[in-house]
Length: 353
Image (cartoon, rainbow, N blue to C red; front, side, top):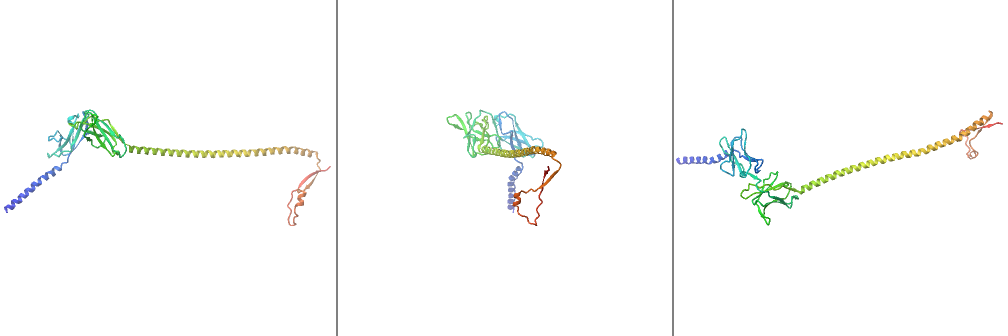
């Protein structure tokens, strides 16, 4: 019985001992892992300022900065009131400041968090600038492969390629001797090319002993994907052609309408002129005939007036029939039932002597 009690006690104590490690891990896991970044950026020109920021928790009582996985903190900062981060200022960047940094923080219960991910701080501007070129050229077609060559006579260590304004980290490539040129170079292959590869590139050189101390940057190289530019050029050209065709169509339509209105106006004017010309001779002829008749009848009226003045007042009138002899002989005899129409009578004055 005693042996059973001893065995049971041993099992309970063993269980408690085994659970102690995982419980501590759970307690430690409650504290969030801090984050670290550099402002204005991790690549800093020699002599320029930079601030390393460490962000953890509002319960943090102190922040600690480590370099190159050292056991002792490089610096310690007390956060300001109601702040969950602290900044470590480097007033002037030098070669000694280059390297990898991590941070951690203490809570009010004096619990230390785990360290952040490493931050690589690079200093540039130490040594001469390398040269950068593109093969087959800086303007390539979409889907084509291109290589960027960085070379220098001063450095034989790794070369570093950086795209300005991009979120991608720098690319690193070991240097190789360039045959019969006395230079060191590194080839960075890119492709197949697409729009994400477009942009401005620079490269840096470094030494084998200090890979985080970079040279001055190379001259900028603008990489262009010609497929995109060609598409834009074609699109712009088609748009301009459509606008020109529309303007030409509107111009021809306006010209045709103006020409039609001019033709109608000219025809109407010509018709008016023709009517005026055709009516003028008729009016002139009528006026001339009236004038001639007036001239012919005027002497006759004068003679009649003279003769009437000389003739005696005793006048005998005779009734004349208007039908001639030929007409009377050829006319058919009328039936008794038909009444002959009333024929006009003509009278002639006969003078008696």
